Image (tube, rainbow, N blue to C red; front, side, top):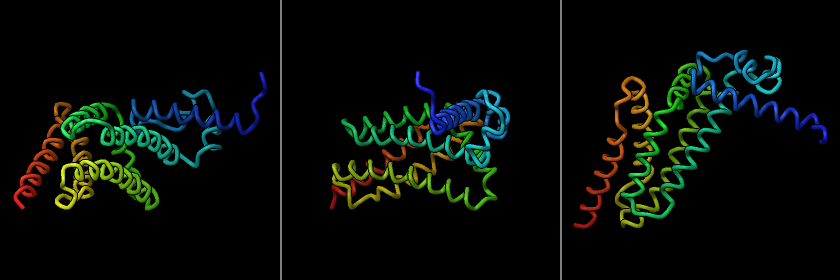
Length: 202
């Protein structure tokens, strides 16, 4: 078996650290997980962490980027795939329910609270939230056009509302696991129904 080059070895180490950090952040929380713990669980020294990342916040951003790519990719598939809008909203509700059940919302909240004093980190988080709005906007644009509501409802405004409500719902869900995400989807349905009725009377 060929020996790994230095670059390949470093890439493998970095990947192992990211995977381990993701597991610990989601399971135990961002605040409770130290870089020393990540290094130990991954089988490396703390120095290996600092040779790959500037600190805990950079490692967390990499983990969040991975999660966002996966989850937003799923959202994109839901809204651009086949099926009626009602079907897609049902699927979106199931996705949101599963996403909020895991440790992702807690990781987002804990990281945001610790990062709020750092303008660069706040900007990075805001950029990622805008990306979420962009993905949902793109999906809703197509659906609204198909329903003849392209000029009646703003897809971006609706998408921004969905993201904001989802953040609030995720916080509520951490306090009360019985909180349902169905209210968000129900609101979207109500807005679209009202818009369709108004559009049909013009």
